[in-house]
Image (cartoon, rainbow, N blue to C red; front, side):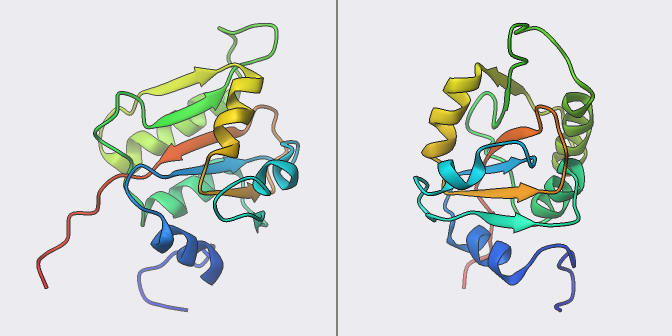
Length: 151
């Protein structure tokens, strides 16, 4: 373990976050998402599990290290409810509260049709699957710039 790093973040997840650059996407999903299939097409190329975490807990841990992109209108995407594009499920509000708290501001979240979401997920850097049972616990987070002091 290291000081200041959430114990739910494995060494592999921290490594992925370190490898990602500004504008790279990270998918956080529930157990129903076809994560293994889609992860094979990502930059990282394989699925990473974050067992024992629901979506908001996983997102909070990840966002404790990774800023969201402030140069795009909506740095978070979610899947629309199939057959009801304006439909809401509880995870949407829980995730909104999580990203707002992590960023200290209201973060726009855009909704994508199911297959559009899958297409964007395939272009992501990596996919992290949580133990969340869903439904619709599928989110794409776009990494922002980390403001670092000069060496």
